[in-house]
Amino acid sequence: MVQLNHLSYSYGSHTILNDISLTVPDGSFCAVMGANGCGKTTLLRCIANLIHPAHGEVVIDGKPARDYTTRQLAQRIACVQQHPQTDIEFSAFETVLMGRNPYQRHLQNESQHDWDIVEQCMKQTNTWHLRLSLPSQMSGGELQRVMIARALAQQTPYLLLDEPTSNLDIAHQFEIMELLTDINRNQGKTILIVVHDLNLALRYCPQCMLLQGGTILFHGPTSEALQPERILTTFGVKTHLVEGYIQIDGQSR
Amino acid sequence: MKHNRLLTSAILAIVLLVAMALCSMVGVVSFDWHDLTQSPIFWNLRLPRVILSVIVGAVLSVCGTVYQSVFRNPLTDPYVLGISSGASLGAAIAILMGWEAHLWGVGSMALITAILTILLIFKVASIGNRMHTTTLLLTGVCLTFLITAVISLLMALRHDKMESIIFWTMGSFASASWIDIGILLPVSIVGILIVLYYSKDLNLLLAGSEVAQSLGVEVEKVRRRLLLFTTLMVAFAVSACGVIGFVGLEVPHCIRLVCGSDNRRIVPYSIFVGALFLLLCDTLSRTLIPPNELPVGSITSLVGAPMFIYLLYKSKRSI
Image (cartoon, rainbow over all chains, first blue to last red; front, side, top):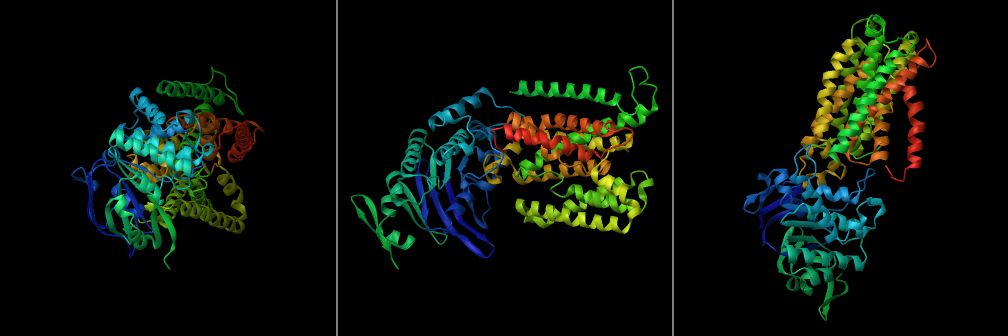
């Protein structure tokens, strides 16, 4: 269970998260939504203890995140971030194998067990055939699946994803969301995902949290969250529901 | 995998030892096995020179590997970071002051300015306790230009010392002594062992510092330790033999082009390949036009650059 207690984060004088308290129950598949700059990414980075909140705390399975060692936390929380561009590249297999790092000591080599897990994670994400490819040789969707495979290889109960579907075409967006749904249902992982597409969230994520100006506007079932009036307050966009789909009418201004 | 790594390292070590034996026999004065033990030239000049070039080669290429991974930039090496030029400033000052006669007078001055330079660069480039890579590299490049200009000015003012300064900035093992080895060897062994210990973390650092942290690496701690020890190693190496460019840049890339990006292979291999490369370059520098010596820094580039370009051209793997 991930609990946030009065979490605040500011960058200089600019407050990004302001007194956020909420509980993410185990097994939930929750969309994190809000306008650009509302603090979605910062929230995920706080939960993963990549940055330290100014006030308040993140509690993971009953223990404050800052009390975990980096290794211990890497065995509980996996992150899928935007893949950074590098000139020195690793093959997809090597990349996924890095997901086993939290379980290895210095100078220790991967065991057969690690190799098996990597193979299984790559097959699950349909990336096994890409194992010898380099990131520069892969498409955006393939690379994103490799990143998810690496997060799966960490074998954590929690999975945080920062916009994994941006830059992907519709088919690949669905593919990623189907994969995550499968992981959530069959492996019981708790998933927090930053997603921009309202309909994608409505279709795949049972829960949703709406952020606005660093505070939580709503946390609960997605169908309730994405009511036209809430979308209007959060994004400033007029919408209406057509046969279960959110139809965007235009900006409110 | 481990078996392969150990085996390859062992083969490289044997090749290096054989090369050291052969290289120490050729030169202006050639030896055969019988008079080796009696000759003071061998014991006091040739052997320290061979050993020093081996240590410096290993240090420069291991440090190049570390810098390229930590800063996630394939163009980084001790030279680009400004450490080498910092050392050459100290050496130039010492030469102008006439401290060459003192034991290690030039070397210790070079060590001091090298460390001051890197401290200044880190100070400029760190925001809070994090290091900004682009700023760091730009600061290093700027300082290199600045220091080169200062050295040129110094040389213009004192024509009489010009030659020895130039020779120092091009690097040379001609003055190698057992004292140099005695100082450099312990620093190098400790430093290289630490780099080997963290070689897996180097892989993760290449994926980005936040990714590395979320995969269980204590990024800031690992980074600080690696930078501290590599900088010390480079400063000591440069102060012993002058500025030798290209080794730290080229050797890690050549290994990378042949056997992939895994630093658990690159770090141990670069110890031996770097050592071998600099040993051969130094041997060439003292045997090509005897009894004259060529600056070893120009030999490393003359031999290394075409080889590097060939590998780049041949390889499908991008660096």
